[in-house]
Length: 454
Ligand code: EPU
Image (tube, rainbow, N blue to C red):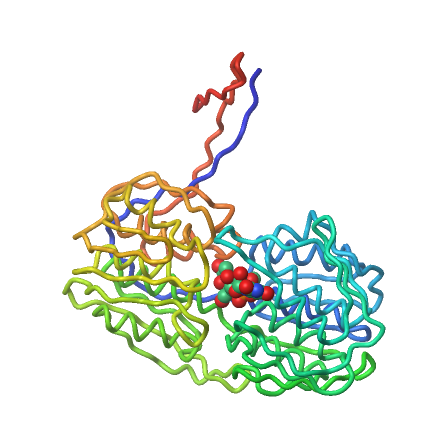
């Protein structure tokens, strides 16, 4: 028995300094939530600009369509009209393709006071609980049942209240904020997530007629409105800080000079400070352009010949060092002089890149959520596989810095979060291409698989 499969990987010839400018796309973790929140608007249109072209965005658009919403994407602008939404049921086949689908729980509960949604998917980086989402929605008056992988939430009335989050979860903050926009009276979320994507979502909702104050701090106040208070809205999503970080670190690690265009300095502060600790020169160039009262800047990183220096990092909630940047930054530390201690506090499995880096001659000791990177002079090429979005990105950066030709697999993860990754790196001078290999899979008599590359 024989069948054909197509395997794709990135072939990267590393060891060249990256130089030039890179345009940063809109933030994935912002745009996805804003599209999910736009499901709430029963009368009017949402125009959402600076949408990144990502596979996760396509799934979110499918969710809008299956619920009966109209959605079009023209270049980087989504137009949505959910006036005739006909369903409040998000099926498993779509919900489990991405993490951000869970935001539909809050928006549909706000609009219809009832929603049935399958559990979300997302990267396999450890336990990704939603107990705080549910605790918050229950406190607002929803009755919640969980059965066969689905969450069913229903409320006669949603009533504003004070909700303390044990940890400042992004998703819980978003879902509670969404449901509270339609609750009677005031809701206060204490110990809320302070991430820039929360602020972006709150800005979008306020432009739509909601009343949210304090987003970006640990106490968010939401004054409930009714569906009739909401109206058409136009919004421009913030730039993707994790994408920007990826290109800046790649520039530093390859001994190059890379400028990330049109980003928000404040959102990248913890990274920039750590880059400087590692001996990277960071320069900021104001552009004069603003997004929601915050200035866009160009950030340039460069090296002045000396070797990168070891530095320790500890991931914590924003504004601390981001867990999403950790795999990429710690990859850079693999070639820094000295030993760097990296402590991951948010997820259980965020060192999946480190085992693969060992194949590239990195010297890393991993002990649960702690890793020590003892810097080697340089990495060597290897065939490696990213097991989640950021570990795949980290391995691409490693391959760009390594001597020789590497193969990086795990592109289905990469494509969820990086728009035009190859084109952007090629513009910076990288030699990188996506290779498709048709494989002839032959099942032998004992059903084990024999692979012959054609
Ligand atoms: N947590 C709980 N209970 C909850 C919610 C979260 O214990 O009710 C725990 C989780 O188990 C996890 C941690 O808190 O260990 C972080 O969860 P959080 O809810 O903050 O994360 P999220 O909303 O699921 C978003 C991003 C992640 C990013 C985190 C933290 C999206 C789609 N995802 O996830 O992004 O790591 O916030 O900043 O917005 C990525 O882009 O690669 C990515 C994983």
